[in-house]
Image 1 (cartoon, one colour):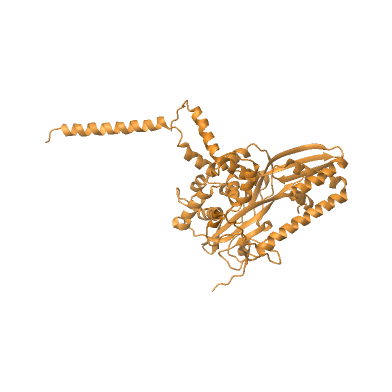
Image 2: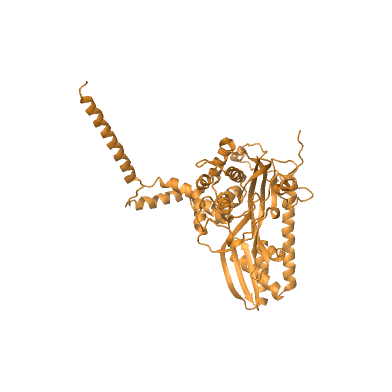
Length: 356
Length: 136
């Protein structure tokens, strides 16, 4: 591909940006606050894809871009580079999660039981059009139970391992800066598992769903059954200069484990992300489940799905096609005209040849 | 085992924490501020399928590190509120140096109780969504 520098259009460029921002209008902290309060699932999605957890910044990015998700995520990914990394927290363990929702489609009687938590899974999808007529929408309050649910519930796969259904590996002892980090090293193939899972945690939701769905519909080799979906909060465990460890607060996260029969055991696929985003996790876990032995160039092959679900790169590549390609396109036209002329010359010369 | 007091301070209600820490500034006397900044904490998680530790992403935090009489006061909280992180560090330092010890302990106990009450309220609602399933 060849590029050429162009000059001119500075005024148009400036006015175009102004036009975009003028349509969104002026805003202040109150709009940011309103977005944060009213759209938590959108905030979660942006934080997950940006790989940066802060609700205020995510709400600000949405306010500033008028909800243009790719731009919002790009703003946050760019902003994070201005901040120093202070430390790496202790790895989050599933058994320590403050759990709001934990269900299994594979087993009815999982240890700890099935807790639906906040979900629209069983809701009637009816648009509350009365609101447009001036009515307020007030949701029915939850009738809280007498006793609280246990905050921590065991993992389904640990229970399956006890029942000889899955093989649980020894936990990876890697900690801190030894954990492979995609933001500091390139993604190479075959990818380290830590890179694969980090990349899926940052992946663009729509792209992950599209590729995961293709595997679910039969273009993959394994059909997923949801072993466990969990929405929870995790503690950020850090260390005081005197050596004491403590939690610097909590972040919301979601995770999914999917299973398929593999010989006499079950094989597991896994994914997790910042924020509450089940669709992304189930899709990503399905890709993880399907990736061993996937054909080159198929949607379930690691290289294929990791590259194509990286939202900042894919959207950036997509929109770059709008930029001037006059020289490359002219060159294509030249080649086309040349081929046409040669073909015309050929047919006219054959037309004038006398018949034998 | 994590330190319950520091964890409580990191989640303590911002306005109350700042207001309380104000009262400690004078009795604490001279303090060296080693660090007051925002930054990122990378948060890893362990995959339940293969046990691999991987990075979920970075969390924005504010950090305050202060020093007095050979003690290190430290605060780290989510978000960009540097004053709140400094307030946490002041309470931590006061607890270590014995300044306003009883009021500090009472403050931490009250905040821990408030957090426990919030958690219980959430978990009682979560419990209301427990399924007693029958299959046919």
